[in-house]
Image (cartoon, rainbow, N blue to C red; front, side, top):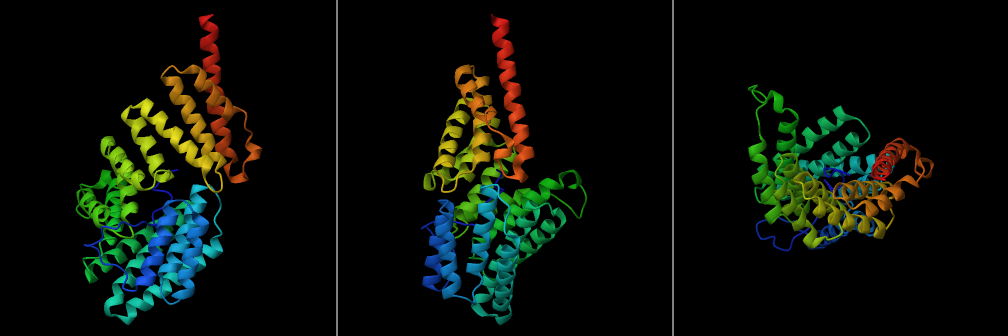
Length: 348
């Protein structure tokens, strides 16, 4: 699971929002905040119901359609499922249409048209990448970036939009870093952190999205202490959230804190097992990682137990689109167990 996976457009809320422009309708704002909070708590069916209520009460506003699409995509990624593409695309089309109507109408709501157009384009981008359409995903990502910039140009107090801009700056530069010497490419990564920090500190709808981006970006940049700090900040509010738990385990392991990574994987595994709609594949990955890490610190009995839980599974027990990946995990577990057996035999 990456973050960059799952919750790019299923957002969250902070009560300290004095610097942030918020939706003018109090009922709409309250429902959006509730739905976002439920999404980060991984109560996806409840979140979907809230966003369905938004659509019923505010059928001409793009927010409900955009967030409902975001919940669909998040469920697909978190549970390693195929998304209902027809339904997802229909929600995104409606979100974009409603957004453009707000933009065309002008006035104070135009900024929200740009903001939710960007949110819908971002979800569309992620959906395309998820199903292997990298070119389409890149084009929609550029469209999201442009619309977020338009939202800021309309109202610089719309702090939540900075997360989308900052994330785009970092990853575009990261993917083209070998060409940064060219005058038309450049390196925009120095711009990214201040923008993401602005949303992380003052955002209302995108605060935790910005934090999750900061976790991923900090790990990617080799700044593991920062990644750990950002992950733990997210976990203070959402202690079972798997985006932050995956980010924490990754940063701890890369830093070389193996025991810390083991502890974090234990918490992550419990979150997966307690989740509403279990994810057997991610549980398998956790057991494999725990076995590998415990073996590296000499805890052979616990390592053997964890790896045995992987080896006992069968690829046919998983959905067809996961079986090849499961086979690779099973092979890794068998290889580690064989090495343990060889070491034990040599010692005797």
